[in-house]
Length: 248
Image 1: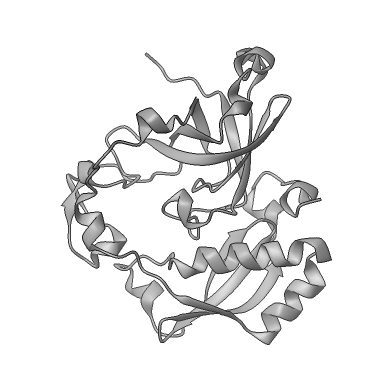
Image 2 (image 1 turned 45 degrees about the vertical axis):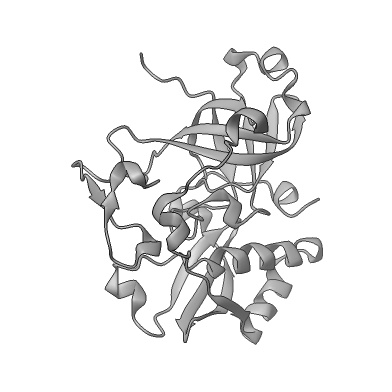
């Protein structure tokens, strides 16, 4: 049976690089999902507002892998491999993912979410309520994940970056943007197998909300060097409404 897309996520993460590997890593990350009219959201969403979290079934629409690889390199394994099905790698035989997000509220046909690990424009295939008595098993084992700590970095804003934020971002949204950038970078978005990304002092950038955040990594610390207004038109990215993302 062919999958049907019920809506497309609007996320603060605009490209794959910088999007957290798990939603719980950046709990403040905002997103919203508008259910398409043909699925009659005025009826289909009834009762969902009573739940605090939802499962989102989605498509890895930006995957570029063309061949199946049975073993992969999770970042926290630092170069070691594990079987594909013992991981949450996006590169799967069928590019379908599952993530848990906090449901902040529902307004009409739209779910307002937080704690997402989805890049903007991700197609959503289904929404299901999280039920702790069913979804949280007793004495669960977490395999190799328990033995391997996820990478963490200290994050610091250079004076230039703070000046950029004060000039570019409305006052009500500055603290939120700084938290989003800091939390996202603290989990080190770099690919540990990409030598170009790991070069000392190499300047990298990621696209978040309406901005490009530039940073360098030195001595286990990420330093945000500058923040610029992103050229969204040239990247052909759908526009985001500033008021929603900055808490208006």
